[in-house]
Image (cartoon, one colour):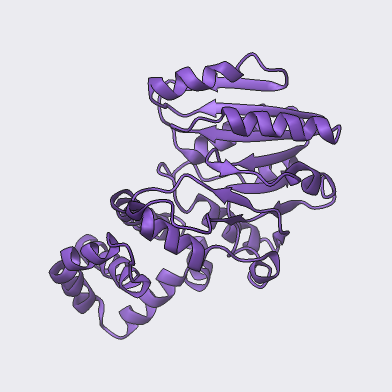
Length: 301
């Protein structure tokens, strides 16, 4: 028996829900599907209300946006079954998705299925998010298993409810970003390693370049917040998060002011490249490192 938890924000999930119901029926898997809307626009609400009457579906609209961590925790608390499957709403499923997970239900404490991105660029204005996904995120289970907790992604994972209740998402993280990073680190600190399988969903909800650049800066804001408020995990954070690893090296070498000046002086030029049809990921890394250096130094004043 499986509780499928899908947080929604401005995404039409009707096809996703229908696919899950059909797959569950085909393999005779007892499920419930929790759809919690996190303050979407009225147009999205109107679309998704059509699934509220479906059997095995619990549809709920929250009055205000509470963030991914809070809404996932709420769904887990409300779930009826002992095994939880979290799926992001902007996911396209393989035809044997639930059948693959069915073989593992009850056998693993936490299992990550992975994700991939479309083989071809959906549109020119989504080039950065697409390229980051294809180059930096689309790895096989064997590749992810080399650093199992570092490779954890919250968009597609199976977990026993008893474990999730002990390691809930950190609700101090209000924006989407790094809640999965912190769960992976907290689990690793307790010597709980995440298992990986090849049961990828396709990530279809790619942000356009401007949105993704903004979200990248917001994720760095969150990262600095976590460093300051989760000091007990700082060592693992520096070890497992690539940006922090390079930040630490730069700090030891006295390069933070240079990086901050580089960011401030070349910010618009770099953003022009990142908005192009062929963004340079090394410039993207420099952009993030420069931004982190800038806000770190600003807070130190």
